[in-house]
Length: 251
Image (cartoon, rainbow, N blue to C red; front, side, top):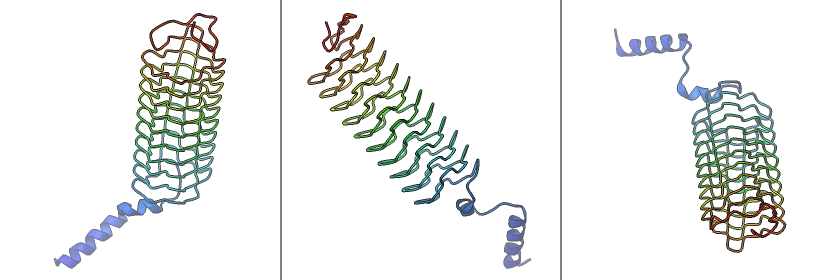
């Protein structure tokens, strides 16, 4: 049998088996469990799409609109999400490890228990997002907006939140150990039982924040602002325990 005939027979069997060439997955319609790994989806309109359990590993979604999308349990590890919109998206248990999401918008998105370790989220907007128990370990959130965000029990250890805005955020029992909080704003934030040990808090603004039983062991707090902050039983940088009546000053 000739090589040409053999090749033709192989192609007939290949396509009749229902298996499509790898590149065709990028043309698949949006849907649960869709496999768009490594696909270029820049600027795509995916508003309100159901992409639960989707595989988007290393995909390019720069400037895409996924507002209101269902992305629970989706895998976006190593994806490029620059300036993408995830406003109101449901992203619980999603995987966003090492994503490049500078300038992305996650306003009112649900990111509970999601994995965002080592993500680049400079200037990203998480206003009113819900990210309880989310993992932001070693993430870059420089100048990010997290106003009124829920970050209860979130892991922000070794993250960079320099110049970020967390006014009114709920950070109860969150971990910010060894993090960069230089000039970060926590005005009226709830940091009850938060761990800020060994962090760079120079110039951070904790005005009217609740730091009840929070810990600053060995943190750098030079020029940090604690005006009217509740420092009840707060552990200070020198391991001193503030009195229960401490307001603004650790007494």
